[in-house]
Amino acid sequence: MSGRRRVEVVEHLSEEELDEAQKADEAPLVRRLCFVKNLYAGDVLQEAASRVGVSQANSSRWAHAWNDGGVDGLRPSFGGGRPPKLSDEQFSDLCEILEEGQPWTPRAIHALIHDRYGVTYDPAHLSRKLRASGMHYAKPRPMDPRSPDDAEEILAERLSQALGEDDDESDEDDPVILGFFR
Image (cartoon, rainbow, N blue to C red; front, side, top):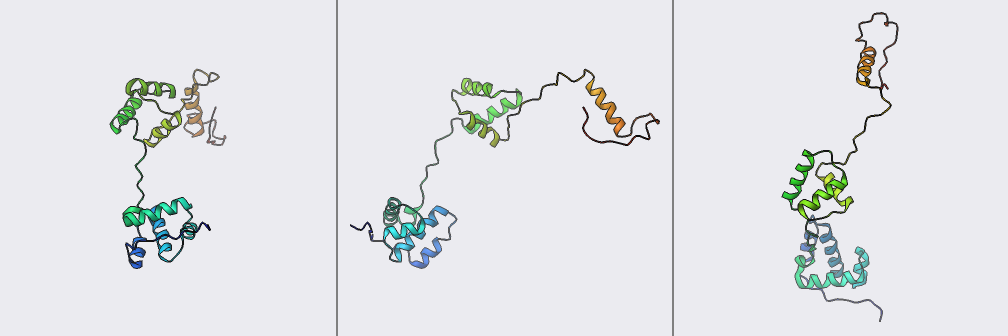
């Protein structure tokens, strides 16, 4: 056995209608219609499959789907994946709670979700969901223990000196320096 199977193809559409159907916005459907067009041209399953880059098993499945249902039979029927653990309303409620009670640690967020809604999320997935809703984990920068107690006063004084807002006229010979100060 040579492994080259010819399949009987039901011609649901003429070649012109098939060309028109290939202009659809659905890339997976267009690829499958190209496969069917190759079968119309007389290719065996293996040749038609290799031209569009699919396996022999997929080509056989696509050929049967075409014969049974035409264009609608070829249209991918993805179920949409697993439903979310939290409804849209619950997730927006969670976001409001997180915004009100800041700051939160990732561990505290997971505990809140588990206690309030009874579900758990993988940490990476939860951070993706929060980023997608416009929230980001951030670590607040603690005060530097080496900074003096009057650091803000020193900064204001140096900044006014650098911008030339100081009342001392004796420092006019010093150049004005802009930058970051410690």
